[in-house]
Amino acid sequence: MNRNSVMVFIEQNDRRWADVSLELIGKASELATRLNVPVEAIAIGHNLKHDLAMLGHYGCDKVFYIDDKRLTHFSSIAYEKSIVTIIKKQRPQIVLFGATTTGRDVAPRVASALRCGLTADCTDLQIDDYQSKGKVWKNTLMQIRPAFGGNIIATIVSPESFPSMATIREGVMKMAEPDTTKTVQIIEEKCGLTDADFPTEVIEVVRQEKTVNLKAARIIVSAGMGVASPNALALVKQLARVLGAELGASRAAVDAGLLTKAHQVGQTGTTVRPNLYIACAISGQIQHRAGMDHSKRIIAINTDPDAPIFEIAHYGIVGDVNDVIPKMIKAYKTKS
Ligand SMILES: Cc1cc2nc3c(=O)[nH]c(=O)nc-3n(C[C@H](O)[C@H](O)[C@H](O)COP(=O)(O)OP(=O)(O)OC[C@H]3O[C@@H](n4cnc5c(N)ncnc54)[C@H](O)[C@@H]3O)c2cc1C
Image (cartoon, rainbow, N blue to C red; front, top):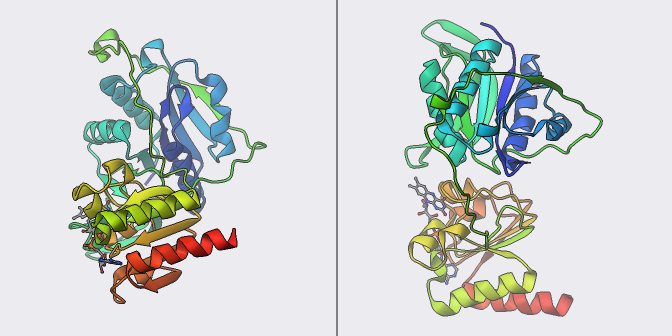
């Protein structure tokens, strides 16, 4: 099998590289080191050449850049055609996409055009040998993700599909520290795009300001279903305010209307890595843990001593949030 590179599709919004793409370059570097191949990237847009150097700082060796005014905004067919052209030419072994709106649109189109497998929403990627029915595939991409409603963690392989392709959600992989001494080779590509590849035209982009920014938060105080009473929820909000924390939530709390979807942490919410995560009356099901188990410090408050959240908490408090949170607030105010 050819082992040419590990490739990352680089997404940009308003001339800013998406965090998930920079995170994926870090993971790609890890895989590429294992395979002894370079890290390559595909960047698509208009007038972005000067911004490409940054991709090198994060560990990218070579970037294939397609510049076209019509590519200023995402366009499904044109992006698919560009990516497929580059993949066919460069033949990477692995291609990674962010599991964003754009990634989820274009990655399946590319997989379908190349007739290869695609594993969505991976939580980890590794290289290992795969053996089945007496046959061994060396250095195969192990695509790891929760399956069957999160009840199992599945390792998916597509050893006979070339390239192996996966999408990964933002925040799942750790972003590498940039090294500004590192450089990237830029190769401009033309992919033969015609007006027929742009069946839609973006006339105006209207952005809604984010009011909740879980990803950037250093401290998150999260509410679970156990704070369904107005008093308990008010206490959680007060604790968040006192600590200068962002407010998170379990899906059950969101589904119950306690907080909006923007607050949801977990497999189908946001993946976070704060310095401190305080889980208030959250049971700690696998789908919630998948979004917060990389937090540096986890404090869990729960009346049930057997709640699964205690398996990953650094500090566990068995108790009622109505008793525990006022004490925490008092202790914090006294200390500070
Ligand atoms: C495909 C799929 C995707 C999912 N995605 C997500 C996701 O992204 N995020 C997510 O969170 N979930 C997700 N879920 C749902 C997940 O399986 C759980 O149902 C959910 O996380 C439970 O939320 P919870 O812990 O708040 O509620 P519960 O499981 O009801 O737990 C409430 C906890 O509060 C404790 N408690 C009750 N009262 C108090 C009190 N007064 N003081 C202290 N403790 C108290 C209880 O002991 C209990 O442990 C998903 C499920 C599926 C199938």
